[in-house]
Image (cartoon, rainbow, N blue to C red):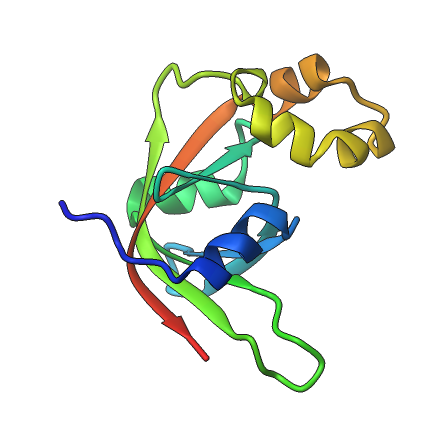
Length: 136
């Protein structure tokens, strides 16, 4: 499948912003948005999760997801991606992604963790292939 075209200004935001709102859908149809740390790599989102979360159950049942960045105070700079998520069986740990560890080093430390303990706790790799981008 062809890689989604992402404007340079949005690519820049994806490299520097810490939080994306990751929306999955529960079995009862209720959307479930949660804030996640992420890495934008080669046109994919890479996210790590603890093993027994609702978002993983949701993805297994329905892999269609959305991610959006926070807008500014006036509701401008909106960025939303729709996509398809996959749980990567035996995926590489977070420590195999140096850019992710560097991006979140301070946050990992504030959780009282090391990169290695973070990778053990958030051991499930999720990859999201964006299929649509909306922005203004």
